[in-house]
Length: 143
Picture 1 (cartoon, rainbow, N blue to C red):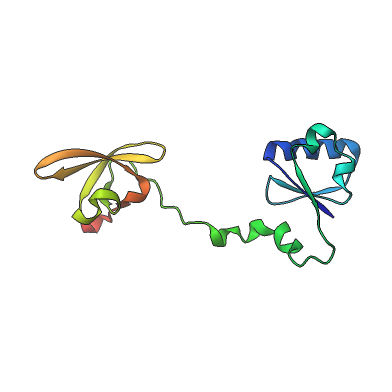
Picture 2 (tube, rainbow, N blue to C red):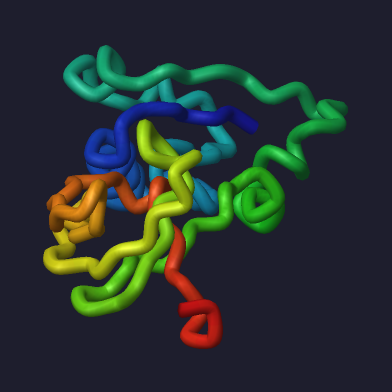
């Protein structure tokens, strides 16, 4: 057994080529890996060979099963993402320069990775642009 590693686009091309040639292969949970029963270096054209890494997997490799099915365990290593705040919701600032000031504000705008929050700071309304990880939605009972 051999594994082929490359960019997802390259692996897609390798998969298409192997299918045209009638070569047996196995997909993995990752778009960047492919398992082939025969040595793909002997089959692939030079244009594809240069773009991939090919290695033989020993028959007695104890990690083969784990590598083949790693996607089933990947949730153990992923960070839990907080939901994006919505415009009009009340949030508390929990990170960045203002984290120790116990500030609460209203989200006025939500962008791809940040949001604008209006807070009352020293008697004035101040608009802060903060990443999502620096704000936490306030439960309605708290305010």
